[in-house]
Amino acid sequence: MSSVAKYTLPALPYAYDALEPHISKEIMTLHHSKHHQTYITNLNNFLQTQSTASLAGDLIKQLSLQQAINFHAGGHINHTLFWENLAPASSSSTSPDCAPKLVAAINTRWGDLSTFQQKFNTALLSLKGSGWGWLVQDLESGALEVITSRDQDVVPATKKPLLGVDFWEHAYYLQYLNDKAAYAVGIWKVVNWKIVEKRFTGSTDIVFGSLVGLKAGL
Amino acid sequence: MSATLLRTSTAARSVLRSGAPKRAASAAATTFVRGKATLPDLPYDYGALEPSISGKIMELHHKNHHQTYVNSFNAASEQLAEAGAKGDVAASVALQPLINFHGGGHINHSLFWENLAPSKNGGGGEPSGALKSAIETNYGSFDAFKGKFNTALAGIQGSGWAWLVKDNETGQIGIRTYANQDPVVGKFTPLLGVDAWEHAYYLQYQNRKAEYFGAIWDVINWKTVESRLK
Ligand SMILES: [Fe+2]
Ligand SMILES: [Fe+2]
Ligand SMILES: [Fe+2]
Image (cartoon, rainbow over all chains, first blue to last red; front, side, top):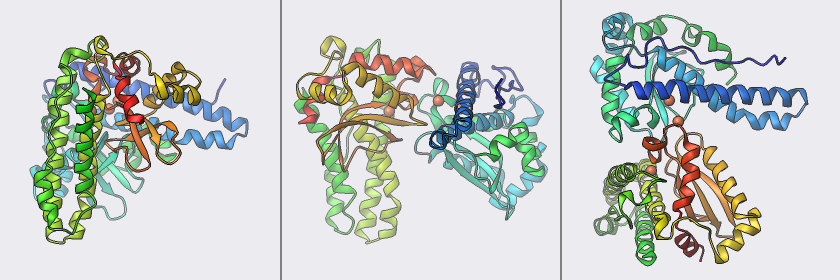
């Protein structure tokens, strides 16, 4: 009877073991079916509670829920973008040749692809706690940038996310333990350059797909 | 045992204190050489906290994670000493987040190891004395306190710690959460800390962190926690 939007876990575009040996089946299974699902379950619950508070005219309660909603909505959005910008290493999409326009822009900005990747990994390793690394495009200047976001913060509204890498410990710990640098190297073998190119050449709405409304509310 | 442990943590804190605020004096350089942080020995075996915390978690957590905080804190401290010796205030200020993060990681983990104990060696049970009274005054009962503490742990969004602290101005105890490796300093004295980073439980509990928060109470060293209240 509620009119509150219910979010559901998106299916992975590949099997749980498809990113091996770079990301193990066990990690992918837990990360998708448990962690991502929990963000969605909590998001739906908090939205329901907020809706009830809204109907009751309880503004204080509504405001007090906003931070939890931001966190779980961010978790849903960030993980959705992450799954989409990965692909099995054997797939043709993991060749940077699939992203000619973006690679040209990366070369202009950083000199070459491997310098960019080093820059990105340095940003990942500089995170002090849980967070994400992002390749983004500034919407005003058009410039490419490497940025990080804390916990489940989404990329700022002034920037379009092109590539996201989850650097929470749950994203790698079962396989890489404390060797997060090795995970940061391995992830590049399973980047879906075809999707990243599509985000680069398309509109921001294309990046967020069905979550564009949720993102706009954060 | 606890006297040794307290010395360790006091030493850890004095290293941070001697490092962070002093920038100008050339004496800072020698202070750092003398005061290099080192990984404290665990006061029990890696497997001694099983089944609450697995031996593999304890080994990685102590030998790798904690060691990395120690190493990175020492490296940042050396850079800070060099910047101080040159009078480079901007460089000193820029180093503060690293000092806070790695120094905080060293302090927090040192306090954490000390406030745990194997259940066959005094871990678990309930606090006594002044701490017991303070908990009952503030929370009604020990069980109610544990419930509040676990709610605080579960509410951490990202990496961080939950602490039972003493407010140095009012003398009251309270539960506070801290993000990442932010240390309990200033207005509050740390009494009991629980590491809620995923590395603290993931190999054993995976996403079921509530189970870890439930099991940690079997290995709390209340004698140490009580001694910190004094
Ligand atoms: Fe998590
Ligand atoms: Fe994640
Ligand atoms: Fe830790």
